[in-house]
Image 1 (cartoon, rainbow, N blue to C red):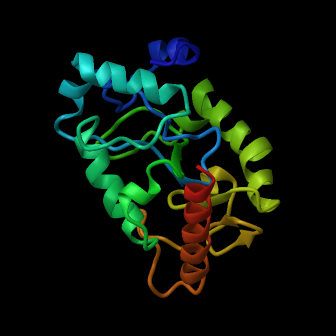
Image 2 (tube, rainbow, N blue to C red):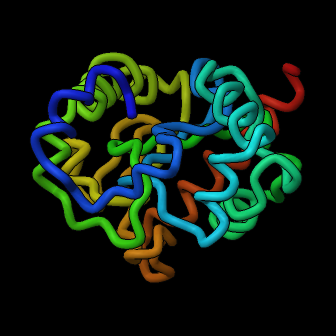
Length: 204
């Protein structure tokens, strides 16, 4: 657990899998030109074993620095599979996106299906995440310095589905974090992400 969350998690036992290492973000969150927002990391059947392995612990330690690429298949197979599907909706392939896209969750703890909404306000790590998003990340997107796309739970991020400001996009999505095909914002978001990824790759 995150050290700041220890006292809260000692008082209450939410439906989190404590055997898995927490992960609020993936990729180069400090500098990536594209950041995708989600609610919390899901749970794959291999996550417990991955967290307990030496390779898995190295992966999580590297990702916590916030300067790494998105994981390759060998580093975290289930994350690789899921992110490949998520990124496909933007018309970019995974290798294009690894160094240019980061993901950020409000909650850092894995669960099969998220039910502990009250914990988003109780956990210091979640409050820190939201404060950083509101005070740093969102202003950067509104100033068109980074592309930020909310794909899950906009009201908990302080956003509203269907709104956009600069490059801060909140398209209408399915529960599985895919932009709805009938959303008029969809093509604008795809174009913004594609351009940001292309420019990010060139600058690297």
